[in-house]
Amino acid sequence: EENAAAASGEVVVHVTGAVSAPGVYTLPSDARVDDAVRAAGATAEADLSQLNLAQKLADGQKITVPAIGSAS
Image (tube, rainbow, N blue to C red):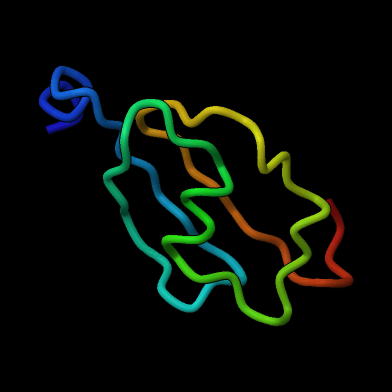
């Protein structure tokens, strides 16, 4: 399934942590961490300053959105 997504110009990423809808998302291959976090819906407790929102996504990547006050 990963190879099919990569061949179609998409990446599959797992978003977890301080988001309202954690899970696996298929996004365009040029998507950024910001796109994945927006898709999963960052909660009010999310500390986005601990993430590089401009980083390009890689197929199979796991993004953990930390909560405010958690160690980076």
